[in-house]
Amino acid sequence: MTRHVSLNDTTLRDGEQAPGVAFTTTEKLEIAESLAAAGVTEIEIGTPVMGVDEIETIRAVVARRLPVRLMAWCRMTSLDLDAAIESGVQAVNLSLPASDIQLAAKLGLDKAGALQVIDDMVRRAAAAGFFVAVGCEDASRANRDHLARVIETAARAGASRVRLADTVGVLDPFSTFELVAQLVVQSPIDLEFHAHNDLGLAGANTLAAIRAGARHASVTVLGLGERAGNAALEEVAAAMAVFGGADTGIELTALPGLAAEVAWAARRQTAATKPVVGADVFTHESGIHVAGLLKDSRTYQGLDPALVGRCRRIVIGKHSGATAIAHVLSESGRDLDPDLAAAMVARVRREAAETKSTLTATQLVELYDKMCSEASVFELCGSRSAVRARAKATVLRPGRMQ
Ligand SMILES: CC(=O)SCCNC(=O)CCNC(=O)[C@H](O)C(C)(C)COP(=O)(O)OP(=O)(O)OC[C@H]1O[C@@H](n2cnc3c(N)ncnc32)[C@H](O)[C@@H]1OP(=O)(O)O
Ligand SMILES: O=C(O)CCC(=O)C(=O)O
Image (cartoon, rainbow, N blue to C red; front, side):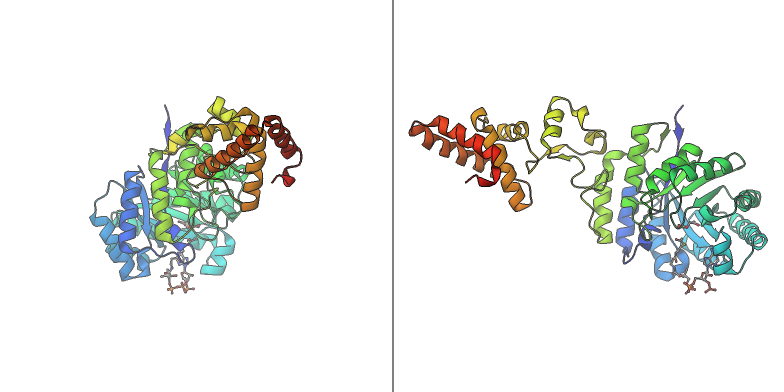
C-alpha cells in the first residue's frame, strides 16, 4: 500500500519571512484557498504574536472553513500561545531551539531547562485544545540524545508531532537520512522535516527525510522562505509523484497556477529554470534534443509536462538543427526545401547569436521565405547549383554569409 506523506505548506509563514515579502489579508486568503484546492491539507498560516493585524488575517482565513488544518507558528511562550488562541487556529507549532548554540545564545537555557519549557508549554497548549507540534529549531546542529529526549518529552506532554528543522541549511541528503532514520525508530509520534535551501539541497534533503521515515514535510510554493528559502512544494510533490513510494495527495496540475499566484503576491520573479514551474523547463532548443524528442519524447524528457499541466515547447535558436526548423516551418504550412536546409540552419544560428534570443515562428517563416525568394532569383538565372554552393559555403564559413 502506498504510504501517505503530508506536506505542511508554510508559504504564508516561512515563505512570508523572505526579505521584503508581505502578503495582504486578501492574498493570504486567496493563497490559502488555492493551496487547499491543490490538495494541501495543512497550512502554517502565520505567527499570531506578530500583532493584531496578523491575528485578524489568520481569523479571516479560519472563517473560510477550508478543508485544511491551519497551524500557527509560536515560540514557546505564553504570549505566543495566547495570541494563537485569539487567532482561532486549531493547531500550533510550538518552537524551541534544539542546538546548544541557539539555546545558549538566544535563550540562555541549557538542555534540561529546554525540556522543562517543552513539557510545560506543550501541556498548556494541549489543555487549550490545540493539535500540538513541537518545532526543533536548528535540530541539524543539535545533540542527538537531546533530540531524542525532546521527542520523548513532547510526546509525553501531549504533542502529536515533532518537527526537525535544518534551520541554517547545513544538511545533505545523506546526513538528513541518517538523522531522521535514527530518531524515527525511537519516536512514539510522527516526525516532520523542515529544510532550508542554503546549499540548494532543500528538496533533496526533504526526499531523504521522507525516505528515512518522516511522515510530514514542510514546504513552500516556489521554495519561498528565509534566505535561500525552503523546499519547494512543486518540486517535492512532483518528485514524489515521479519516484513513487509515497503519495502527497497534491493535484500536480494546480502547481503552475499556484506558483504564479504566489510569485505575484510576493512580487518575486520566477527563474526560467525553476523546476516544474519555470518558463523554460519544458522548452527545447538544441537540435539533437528536438530531433530525438520528435521521434520519441522519452529521449529527452524525464518529467512529462502534462503531469503538471504544462506543454512541451520547441523553440528555434542558436543550437537548432534542420529537423527542428523543418518542424516549426511545417506548423506554419511550409516544407523546408532540403536544398536550403543547411543554409537555413546557418542563417538561423547567426540571427539567434546576433540577437541573443530565439526566433519566433513568424520570424522563422519570414527568414525562410526570404531565402526561398533569393533562391528563386538564382534559379531564374539558371544557377540553382550556385545556391547550393552558396549554402555549403555558408555552412563552412557561417560568419561570412550575406
Ligand atoms: C527559524 C525561524 O524561522 S524562527 C521564526 C522567525 N519568525 C519571526 O521572527 C516572526 C516575526 N517576528 C516578530 O514579529 C518579532 O520578532 C516577535 C513578535 C516574534 C518578537 O518581537 P520582539 O518582542 O520585539 O522580540 P525580538 O524580535 O527583538 O527578539 C526575539 C525574542 O524572541 C525570543 N525567542 C526566540 N525564539 C524563541 C523561542 N523559540 N521561545 C521563546 N522565546 C524565543 C528571543 O530570545 C528574543 O527575546 P529577547 O528579546 O528576550 O531577547
Ligand atoms: O521550529 C520550527 O518550527 C521551525 C522554524 C523554522 O522555520 C526553522 O527553523 O527554519
